[in-house]
Length: 203
Image (cartoon, rainbow, N blue to C red; front, side, top):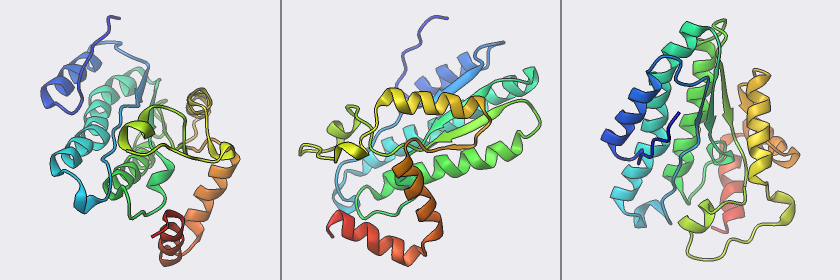
């Protein structure tokens, strides 16, 4: 299949990808990996940048999934991997909109997994923590300094996502530390979680 370059923040480009996904036997596995983040605090951010982030992180995931799902269900096989984030589990004073988009991706994936149950289609949300890619450098002005033990390799995240989808896992959280943090985020009362998040951020 030929490559199809597209800017998913542009509705017409997203529509071209949707059309490709709707063609017979287009794909057996859709990976919604495109994602962007807005710089800084919400009140200081550019509203156009926030809207662009919503278009890529939320609208494009929804539209491309909607385009490919009927074909997958009709064939009774295939999968969708939606790349979410640990940020979707924990409220944060910085990157508020980004965290909200990833919470949406996770819940969307969980809900769809119930919709397609018994069809042969597998849906997985992969929720990595800090992963060494250019993403963090593009959305920050200062160097990114994260303890080595918390750094994930992109290949590790990709392998976990693919393995999780093959096994029918709805949520895949790579790394023991991040799996423990994800579990804690669901057990700790939300007010305490907000306090802890603020302290970690130094605010």
